Image (cartoon, rainbow, N blue to C red):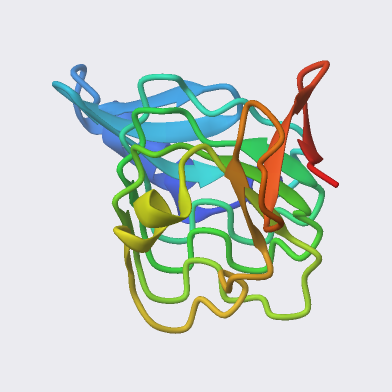
Amino acid sequence: GSEENGSIGYYAKDVYTSLTTNSKLVTQNDGIYYANGSTKVLLTVKPTVANIKIATDCTSIGAAAFLDCMRITELEIPNKVARIETRAFDNCRNLVSLIMPTSVKFIAEEAFDFPESELKVYYLGSMEDWNSINIEERNGILDVYAIYYYAKSQPATAGNFWHYVDGTPTIWE
């Protein structure tokens, strides 16, 4: 690891892999993951990255995984992710578009604690699905105004709904 690689995960990977040949820390798509059986946790992402595709078999986004990733503006969370840990998106103030699957069941305290953001969360489920997520305190950006619920066809009632237009999340007018 080196300082320009970012978070402690890059240092840990170097140390861990030099101590054992069976490392559970793997590098994939500019991120470091802890992989053990069916569990795959995104531990850290280089803060210099502007675009990242989270591994499709990722099951959790770890604490401070996207710490200081100020170049990322759009992100899609894969549909196997069930947990988003504390401060996962700390200081990602330029993140404006996040597609979140219905597989997410837990969002830890301060995972999205950056109140001066323009973030829009495009949730792939209904308002009822969203309300069933265990969202801990101090996630101010995750209020009703920032959340849009997926609707393949235009809803009959007004509200925060979105759909895909040529692969891009688009708010229903």
